[in-house]
Amino acid sequence: MQNSLSKTGKNYRKTLIACYMGFITQAIAANFAPLLFLTFHRSFGIPLGKLALVSTTFFITQLIVDVLCAKFVDRIGYRVSVVVSEITSAAGLIGLAVLPQLFPDPFIGILISVIIYAIGSGLIEVLASPIVEACPFMHKDAVMSLLHSFYCWGSVAVILLSTAFFAVFGVENWRWLAVLWAIVPLINIYNFATCPIEPLVEEGESMSIRGLFKTPMFFIGVILMVCAGASELSMSQWASAFAESALGLSKTVGDLAGPCLFAVAMGISRVIYGKFGSRLELTGYMLGSGILCLICYILAAVSQNPIFSLTGCILCGFSVGIMWPGTISILSKRLPAGGTAMFALLAMAGDLGGAFGPGAVGLVTQAADDNLKAGMLAACVFPAVLILTVLLLRRNGKPG
Image: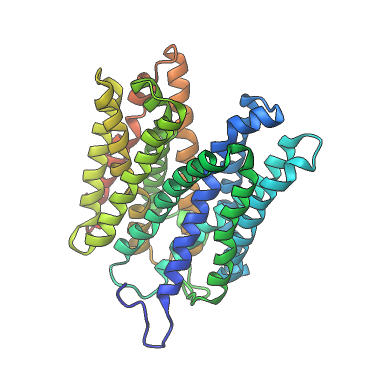
């Protein structure tokens, strides 16, 4: 990585590796428990409807952390906050293996564990991007895209390695796997405790939350993040159902053909921009990605050929890859004094889109007599609004 060793002798590549592992930790937190829903149902007798609260609790906790970060991280300090993110991530994963047995209602133990590691996930979501932004790397928008690709690779690793573990050792040994996954954040505690971390904005110079809300550019960023989160999660959350219903695949194969390939495609998109970003214009890349995303949603929604529908689903992963990190990079350039509050509120906007989008797809699907294609057609509004917003950005100021 260019400029990874500064003139002062600080090794910023170590910072980058810590943030890479931070995003892998977030992927573990987001993806591991949902793989165990049927196991929790069979082992503990927890209704599946009740288990749906696990994902809701995870994202609500992240949203709360996003808001709190906007007010308190600058006071606490980046290093302390990011080390706490890894401690809580590890504690929550270990708790998932232990706490259900300690409560009369195992579901309470599961929820407590989810809340603990969701705190860590929310912190790393807010902190990793500004930590990297503050490092003296060249072509930071490309570095940011590559950084966010590690969430994708982490998601793929969790799905593949967990599936392999269950095949070899049996799903009844899932508690051991939860402890094994906790090793990643435990190692990263040391990385974040020892790597160089620079202030994003000098003390007293960052914009206040009130100042951000008075800035039109910030609201453009919020719209982009809501659309980015909704465009990504509306498809990825339903990818497995698409694979199963379109091709008649089993649940296990459906998870691999749907969410796993979606994450691979999203990671490839981010790596491409990370590799060639210095030669590409960011808003142009985002505009092209938004158009491709809209085409993918339409393809998934209207195609009568199941292979085409699944292709639209997977290619959608490629199209949404740049949206989240690209928006962060654009706002970092346009509002350099935005500080931690800006990163936290942008993360909150992305999470809101990620929570609202799949829910909207589900409501439309239900209203259309469980026609998932109708839900996907309705979700076209998210990439469409993103396209219009990027066009507005390009008209009112320099590109990227």
